[in-house]
Image (cartoon, rainbow, N blue to C red):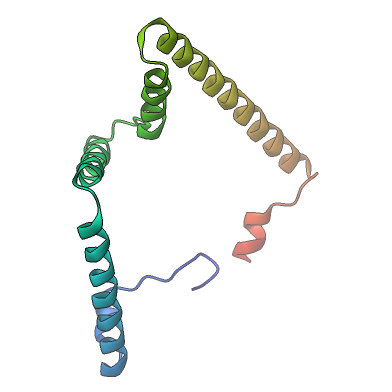
Length: 132
């Protein structure tokens, strides 16, 4: 670790380690793999299907660089479905969308306020202090 976060650890760095440290890392990876395999084996098949679909959606969004906010879209559908769809679902979804828009406006105003306070010197520039 350094000031910017975790250091890069790649195959070259791994190959430069002593053999006993390499074996400890390999053993840790095997233990992690075994635990994950056990978790996936115990998971209901429907949950596994949902996880696979979510991962596929994530991959498509990343590959096509669409900028879709998948969690927001899933939340919108969940809000609508909670009220059984129809008019009640549409009203609930509209309320949710208004709330999200209002939160976005508040966040943008807060960001503008912090940037102004930073430029005027009312608050310290913490990022520049980290880099020093």
